[in-house]
Length: 259
Length: 101
Image 1 (cartoon, rainbow over the protein chains, first blue to last red):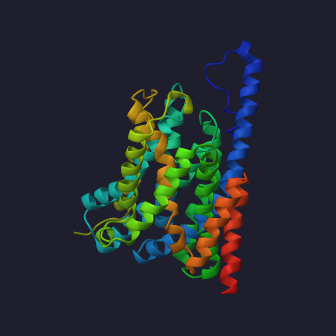
Image 2: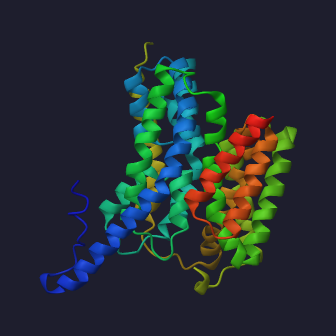
Image 3: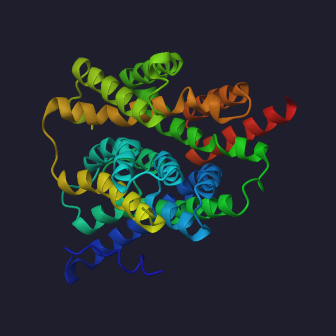
């Protein structure tokens, strides 16, 4: 793999050998940690994408088509919505619209993630990171201290993307090969990870702790309201995220230091 | 009209990528507006929290297994366990509970 060979950042000159070497070591360390954090995500992805594969199969996609779509979109709700649209024979415009709606939360996440990237981070890194801003990779990236090191992100991508694609492909080949019990157990891996990301900061910051509790309560109430039954879960997430984050931003503005 | 599955997939890929990459490439500076900064600071916590609950109860075959996984996850995260340990423990809890039920 030449990833490790490419880790020397551009703006270092030959005289900066020591600095370069340190940077390289830091990148390798970040890469290793990315792999470690990527494994549980990969397992969760495998379970989720398996059911995505079943949807793809019902939409008439071949294994190759399903794996291709999974590998290059890395989206669960977006993938489902897209496959549903294919099976119902919607227009290309509808496909674009459905994809925007189902994935709109990534727009919010990427905006938040943009503030986690070093302002000088070259454009090619931004284009690569953009491939895989998923709920999970966004979550673990956010839990990193300081600026996000792109190599941490790439490692997580390398570990998780193959799981997502092979899970989808397997779902198409053999819809019910994995016992429902195993799928059920694996499907909470992703939620476990979300908790691992949001709970430790809540321990240190009472506002965040209160906010998480508020989110649980509001999200629970909304899930029971008939009014929201017609709204897709992706849209529910966007509405709740925007409303609650705006509420928190108004009443508990963050001072510069806290970032 | 006969539609091509590859064109559908192509649209999915391009639109999904655009949604993710535009903010990353267009917002390259530190945002100084206090409201926007605060908003973006809270987004991750809020979005991950609303995605977790009550969805975790519906992800498992038995809601009680999901609820116990939630409690396990919160406790382990509170006591500083690693992401991997927390995630795997949640899976094990669900597996055991659903086996007992």
